[in-house]
Image (cartoon, rainbow, N blue to C red; front, side):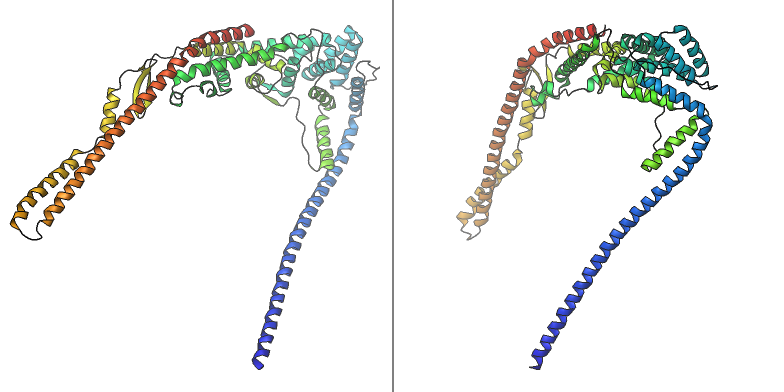
Length: 511
C-alpha cells in the first residue's frame, strides 16, 4: 500500500513539473514576442522622431531662408507675372513688370509678350536685352514658350539657337528638344532642323569613330532574332555546318531590317501644318526654368525646395537640372533606332544613320548570296565523309576504320584451338597406357581449349556482323544527308534573289 502511494505521489509531482516547464516555455515565448514587438515599436518611434527632428530643423532653416528671399521681391514679382502670361498664353494679358538689373526673365517675358502680339520691333529690343543678360536661358525660354503657344512660325530662329550643332554628349534639355523635334512638336521646321543637326554631326565624325559606330549598328542588326529558326529544316548533323546555316540566317536578318525600316515609314510624310501636343517634360522644363530664379537667388530657391520636400516627405530629392548630362549622342541615336522608340524617332535615326544601315544591308546581302558548297565534309559515326547531292565520294576509308574498330584478336581463338589439339594428343597417349585417373587432366585441357575456341569464334562472328551493321548505318546516314543537300539546294539558289530584293528595298528607304 505504501508503494502505491509513493507511486501516485511521484506521478503527481512529474505532472506538476511538466506543467511548470510548459508554463516556463510559454512565458519565454511570450517574452521573446513582446521583445520583438517592442523593438519594432522602438524602431518605428525612432524613425518618426528622427523624421520629426529633420522636419523641424528644415522648417527652422526654411523660415530663415524666407527672410533672405524677401530681399528678392522684385524677382518674385517678375516670376509671378511670367507664370500669369504662360497660363493665358493664347490670349496674352497686359504685363506689369518691374526691371530687375541682371535678371534675364523680365525682358525675356516682355519679348514673348511682344512676339505673341506681333510687335516685332519691341520683341527684338527686349530679346536683345534678355540675350545680353543670359543668352542660353533666353533662347530656351522663348523656344519652349512659343512651342506651348503653338507659334511654330515664330519659333524657328530661337530653336536654331536653343539646339545648336551637336557634340559627342548632349544635355538633358537638348535631348528633350531633339525628341520633341522628331515627334513634330515644332512642326516640319523642327523635324528638318534636328535632321540637319544629326546629319552634320554624323558627317563630321572622324573616320575611325564612324567605322566603330558602323560596326555597332551591324552588331545590333545581327543580334535581332535567332538564326537557328531559319535552319531548323536542316538535319541535325548539318545544323553545325556554317556554310549551310549562315546564308539563311543573314537573309533573315536582312528581311527583319527591311521590316523595321518599313515600320518607320508611315511617319515619313506627316501633315505639314500639324504639330503634336507639347510633351509634359518640356512643359515641366519651362516651369522649372521660370522658377529657377536670378543668379543670386537661385541657390536659395533650390535649397528652399529641398527643405519643403523634407518637411512633406521626410527626404529631399533634388530635381534634375535642365542642363544636366543627357547621354552620349551616338548612343541616343542608336537607341532610337534599335530600342523601344516611336516611329518618328526611329525614322529620324534611320535618316541620320543611313550610311551605316546601307553598309549593313550590303554586307548581309553579300553573305546571304554565298553559294552553298558542292560537297561538305561531314562527321558521320565518328568518320569524316565528303558528301554531295550524289552521295559520299568514297567509303573505303570509313569501312576500313570500322573493320579495324570491330576486329577481334585472333590469338585467343588460336590458343583455344591449340589447347584442344594438345589435349587430344595427351588423351591419345595416356588412355592406352591405362594410367588410371591421369587422362582426366588432358580431357580438361581438351574441353577448355574447345570452349575457348568456340567462344572466340562466336565473338569474331558477332563483331563482324556488328561492323557490317555499323557500315550500313553510316552509309544510310550519308545517303540521308546527301538527299537533304539535294532537296534543300534550291533554297540556297533563291536566297540571292530574295536578299537582293530586300537590300534594294533598304537602300531605297535610306536613300
